[in-house]
Length: 85
Image 1 (spheres, rainbow, N blue to C red):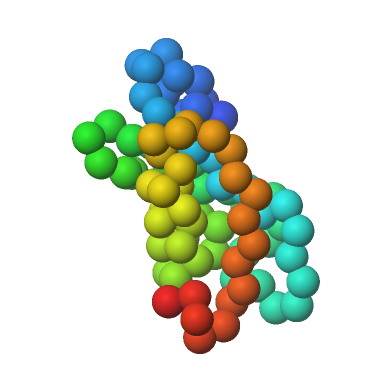
Image 2 (image 1 turned 30 degrees about the vertical axis):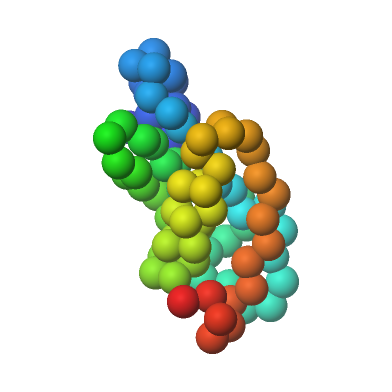
């Protein structure tokens, strides 16, 4: 199942969904432009896909969980250095 089918399925089921997408990058990055990670929340967060793996995916998950109560979109900048972990 592709990520857009997952979105449609989750919406039909009434799940809270968050789609993280790389919209700009510079320098050496672990994932290409337009990489996506879908985070669903059904008693706990579940991620499908990746925006770079490891620390970056974890940072995105923390950002999603902070915005969960408001249910609003966020434009976030992540810098891949020692501070991300």
